[in-house]
Image (cartoon, rainbow, N blue to C red; front, top):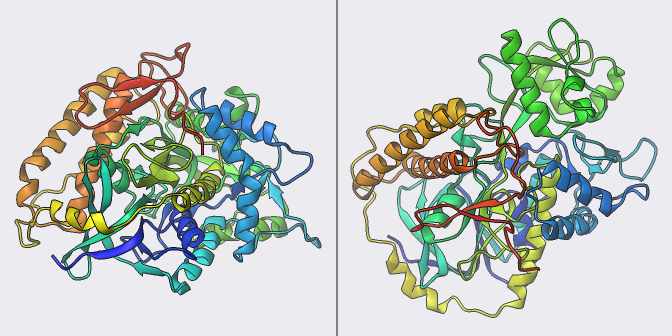
Length: 535
């Protein structure tokens, strides 16, 4: 193991949350941003729709708050919703100050606002249909150029370094050299994204294996609500193609969900039709596909002028055209796919976890904003608001990295030249989760999933100390950990709420409670509040 790299702040992850925090603190601190890809492959990069924020006088924060709580299935933390929504406009202004150019109304300097499922007003600020990609690209360039920020790409985090419930850094595998490297810091920020790769079909990038969630759990952090993994209703269907998200804005701009015979079906399930929240739309599509024995349903925007479609949906238009579908004339084949995690590492509204000096922001965190179901375009909003809130808290703290030097030895002196992993069962995990912990669940299959995933997790734990650590092995371990926790939380939630729908308990309980687990506990704890500390 090489000598530790020492920084004021260690940011693990390079999506909107991690980049936003690094830029917010760079004037005062020496920062390391470490990620396991090239720095441009986070889930933020794939967020097409936009950022929900109240920017129109006809709209109100009270309406945005009410919409979010309604979509969240009664499980949202009202304090979190209020805090994040009230800081939405400031987040948009911060992005514009940092060079993000949003789509404007034709012949105007006013922002073009669109509408998505669950929202009562047009409040989604966007850059065509590639908002996440533009935000990440713009911020990433400034992070790379800043003299106080050092970027380390193709590093896979192995474990956090903690002592006496305080985090001092993390151990990494340098993917390029195969060497172990230790990063020490006064503050460690997990911005590692969610765990949607638990599922066989997902809209998330290939390395979204919940690394931060699993590392934090092993270090003693509280983890909540992993049973609520969102399934986006409209992923592009192609039998042999890679997953591709069809932005919800298409429905917001008049796109209709239809069966192959051209008949609409959403109004049977919700008076809001295509504009119902994602959990409702996803279950409706799933039911129609099963009843009619379909591989997909269709999303039709072709009734809109071709110029309109090409102007506001250039990414979707180009992708579909490459697959032989002209969406100005044809409907788009779509299926649900695992999308974003609603649960994660429990934090307060400053991004602090229950481990001292360990922060978590973005999709890897559970602030209470999303409850049992994410509302469209609240995701990037949360990333940016919580990045700024965590930055403010870190600035108010006085700490030193000096004591962290002793923690370097906590990561045992294992060698990269161990035994290779003979059997990676990641695909087996994904199949179990898709088939038994999917859109519609039942207790029999959930119990089977828990037993099967526990066997996989325990089998890996037995051989882990002797394994040669590779990125695949590390991700497999984290995937197994997260899938088991998600299945266990789903099995023990004897109700249907938001994204968790089980035929054995089709109604919601009178009081909504969060599922919370911590290593060493034998039972899931249930709490009405996810966190109480205000920012």
